[in-house]
Length: 267
Image (cartoon, rainbow, N blue to C red; front, side, top):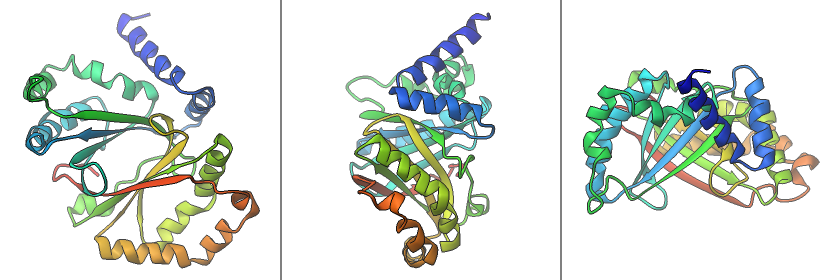
């Protein structure tokens, strides 16, 4: 086997093996289902003086570098409403786990990326490029197997995004919540006027088990209008009234943030 291919395969296998057994199995099963993407979602915690350096890095080095690896579209977002700011999110879709977990190694061999990223990568400890980086690896839900870029992105129209993470107390509750989203919530989001972007089941990350999704809208007024429509839809009342979803509280905590896309974001 080619050494580079061996390394890539080993890294991908290690990433899946690092997840709890149930999630590793889910990853392998999901990979067998044609068309379901994987996502890496990064959150860079920043200090205010670090924002320009991070922004320059994402725009001039990371996004074009990832695109050259076939990772596209790449979303870059600033937190407008949420905890632990300032911070920036980077969303990376991939056709396989291997594509995502080997991205950094492959970027390190990209001379154009290394040159463009130099200031960020070589920032000294007394003035680091960021405070901390969090990352999660997800597999797309069956009901939304691929990321959808809103029409407003291509039109460069005003847009905001809401990132929501639903944590569950048990694996049983988590699976039920995933089924609930798969079986009914996604079409209701569309009917209500949201722009669904992605829905992901977390394979590796913090506060598992959980699922994360992103929905878009033109502005906060449209967000409120869409949520009202979602909550009042007859389909919502039927879906959330089914015994298989009401036997106990499926969700123990919800984290949400409203994000503003960077000018160069591809989502």
